[in-house]
Image 1: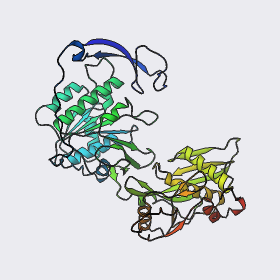
Image 2: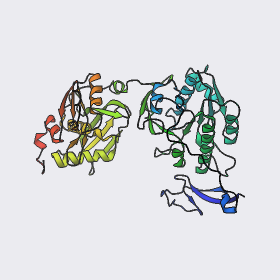
Image 3: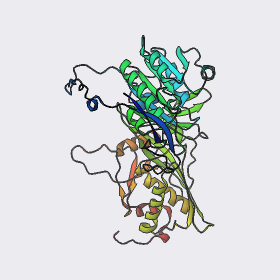
Image 4: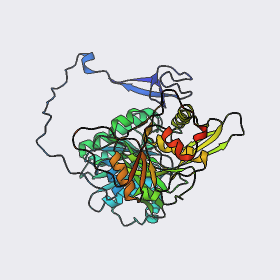
Length: 466
């Protein structure tokens, strides 16, 4: 028999406490404990009941081929999901308010509705509001079934009976509630319970489930961390609403590669996919400008070329300012320290501003050398050659280390018309040698190798051990 019990649940991490306290002992957040009522079911073994039934174990190699993926018709979304939607999978899509999550999913179900049954459930808007958005996007004629509902019991009864749909969108999971849980919608217990019920019916009936998730001010998905473990795929929608570009990034995918990205452009007709993001990111670039450098990056399996901009100015304050957009602040400080200690370039007393043009956030360490080149160019006033791309990881001793997929980066640069590259030497490999790139590559082994390219010899000093 179930017995009710009151407990306090942290709305940040999901930890429970028997009594209220100002600070959560698990995550350290303040004023996040909320009282909730939980029902505890005692296991049958504890009350003298019968044990569970035996489980049938099967072999690792199955005899049946997996079901084919269902493509959405949006190439960038299919790329991020690993080639399309898998029947019975649950996909969590998170992002800032107004970034375009609902717009993208409405476009996806409208495209899928040509050959599949699609259901769009909104808990934040009325049906008429969704119809207005569909009208603005030119999707009014799509055969998508709409509903405005928040009760999970009603949704499960509707989706579990009769002929199930092929794709279901829940916008958003934080607005859903289960009447068996005595807490407000959006709390940790409600989100966990509602997600569990919806995922179970999706796997039982074999339809693909999209869950839209809100994010906190720190940029993480709101609700319990276990929510990301329950779903099969986690997608983050990134971008600045001041830019027209949007990045859809996969951070978890049980059916495909992680760290894959899809690039979209926000237009009057919704989100349009960008087939060649490198050309788009470099479209507004001006050549022969100091402080500008093109980085040949890699996002998942896709090479992406972006412009890194740096500005170095004398500081009028006691503590120089550091401002970064699109890169890691700690890594910028490390590159500045390496240039100071290993090459004798005086940067520490200056204000330093760094920006990745286009709104893309670069995460791989291969951008170290491009950032160093942009900083040296800004300090000296000598531009990096307009037809040159730069990539390489910088170590604390000043060495430039090889990075993965060197040939892929160079091939993409050559395709876009670049003639030269500053890059580390390739790793020594046995077997067949790598194909010779179409562009001229200057091997960079140490950060001092690029200092002399900007006329900064007077600021150099020989460091010990080099």
